[in-house]
Length: 437
Ligand code: GDP
Ligand code: MG
View (tube, rainbow, N blue to C red):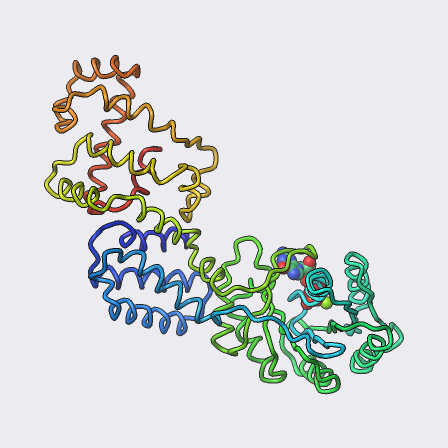
C-alpha cells in the first residue's frame, strides 16, 4: 500500500538515523513510486523526484540536524508548488457572472453545478440560477431540477428547445430579468471525446463568452483524465479544473498530471454525492493526500520537539556497542509518553489507522511493562541475558505479573533491540508497533 511504502522510505529519515546520499536516493525513489501509485504521469513523477533530489542535496540535508524534517518539507513544498501553490477562487466579476461547465458524461457536471450554486449561495451570498443545456436526455433536465430543489436554487430549462446555444442565451437573459448575479450553465457530455461534443461546447462557449469556464473531471479516471483535459483545453482554453469523486480512496494524482499538462488551476474538488460535498482545492492538502503522509509532518515535528536529542544520541551509542538495556528501554518509554496520547500519535502515522481498529492502546499499556522493569535489579536491567527462571519468577512476583508476561516483555525487548540496531536508533514508531505484538 502506497502510504506504507512512502512511510517506510521516510522512516529512515524520520528518526536520528544516519542520512546518506543513498538514503536520499532511496527516499526519492519511494516518493516517485508513491506518485506513480497515485496515478501521476511517469515523466512528471520522474522530473519531480529529480528536482527533489537536487534540492535535498543542495540544501545540505546530509549535514543538517533534522534531516527527516527537512526532507519531508522539501517533498511537500515541491508537490504543493507543482499543483499551483495557492488556491484560486473563481471569477465572479460579471453581472451576472456566467459559469460554464464542461466535461465528459458522468464526470459530475450536473452534481457540481448544484454544489457550486449551493456554495455560492451560502458562502458568498450570491443569488444563482442554474441552466439546463443537456438536451439529449430528458432525465438530465429532471436531474438538474431535482438538484435545484434540494438547494433552493431556481433552474431554467426549455424542453421544447433542442439547441443548447439558444437555451444558454435564454437562460442568461432570464437571469438578468430575474436579478440573478450568477448563472451556472450545465451542459451535455459524452462518454469519450468526440467532435460533436467539442463543437457543441465550443459553440456555447463562443456564444455566451462566460467569465469562467470550468472543466469537470472524474479523479478516478487517472491517466485518461489528462488526455481529456488536454482535448477540452485545446478547444476552450478553460479557466479552471474541478476534480470530482475524490472521496474514498482516490489518491488524486490526476491533480498533478492535469495541472502539469494544461497549466490551469484546480479550483474545487468534489468529495461525495451530496450537495455539501464540495471543497476549495488546497494544493498543500492535496500534497499530503497524494503522498499518503497523513499527518507525518506534525508527527515528525512533535517527535523532534519531545525527544531529547542528547538522550537519543546516548542510546544510539549504546545500541551500536550492544549495551542497550532495560534502563534505556524505560527511558524510551518515558520519551514516548511525553509525546502525548498514544492513540493520537498512532493516528498520525499513515497506514496505522487500520492497524488501530480493534486495538485498545492507551498509556496504561506501558504500566505493566514499567512495573516489570522496576522489579529488576540494576544489574539485570543492564544484562537481560542473566534473567534465568528463578530471577523471572522473582520479578513476576515483585511486579504482580505472570512469568508469562515477563517472558513476553523479554521477547519484545529482544526484538526491539534488534530492530533498533537495524534502524540505528530511529524513532519510536517501530517500537510502538512492537509493543502491540
Ligand atoms: P454529468 O454527467 O457530468 O452531469 O455527471 P453527474 O453530475 O450526473 O454525476 C455522475 C455520477 O457521479 C452521479 O451518480 C453522481 O452522483 C456522481 N458524483 C458526482 N460527483 C461526485 C463526487 O464528488 N463523489 C461521488 N462519490 N460521486 C459523485
Ligand atoms: Mg449531467
